[in-house]
Length: 183
Image 1 (cartoon, helix red, strand yellow):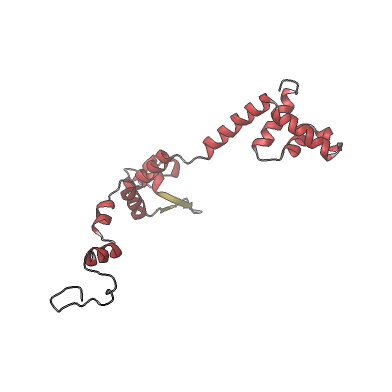
Image 2 (tube, rainbow, N blue to C red):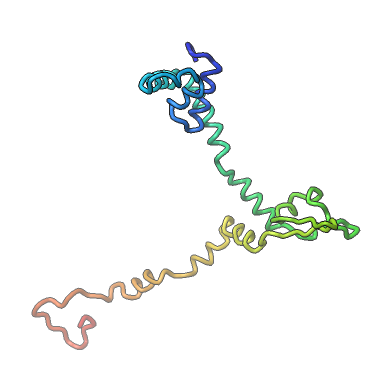
């Protein structure tokens, strides 16, 4: 942003970070260039994109976007853990009244797929499938690996059975007697 107006360069960098072409980003940052010839817009946009401060800002914006876009594995496992450990009794107060959604603890909230409140103020909760959460948790923890290792690969099992017992074609002129396993 050395020779560029800092505010306009920021608009340009933000537009680039959104995936807009350099020429269109320049048109956003510098509206008067909409009257320029396309070749002139393209050349000026290339100069702006080559500016070291614009490039540095673009890298910052892209890094921030990438960080937001990445799924956090620990957070996902925490959600699965909460659902696996959930107890639907968490929707009730000690006096038997049903809790409102904002009154639920985080583990019970994780178990709730949706809720409805009817015209009389009654709450109906719908819960996620706890079995699928437990299955996912078991997979994450590798609890199926032992079970899977007990199952033999049918092709490998067949290969082991015939290994060493298969001979190639009978050589021309070879004679095998009945006692020979090869014939």
